[in-house]
Image (tube, rainbow, N blue to C red):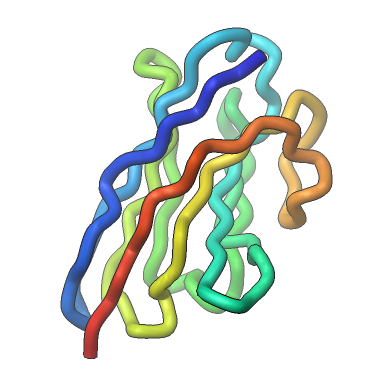
Length: 123
């Protein structure tokens, strides 16, 4: 089992920045990929970014490509999402997820999920 805990969410004005963290614990040695997803009220959960835990591969959704950066610190078992130039449409609950098999831009391979952290961007 892998436990994931997100932090760093909050409220910010449009154009502002936030950095989300996802701390992993448990059987992290089996982790291949980790990702960020988000879900706005009344909408489905969407892919934001993903990273290979061992390094070398990142995937980022086109909608955030020039504004969000995913990274990880293996020594701290933590993944990050730096979000710049935030827009009201970025408002959502952000979830981190871990996969034992792949790095993917869809939720299906991710078998561990955090509880989510709220990000609210006001105009």
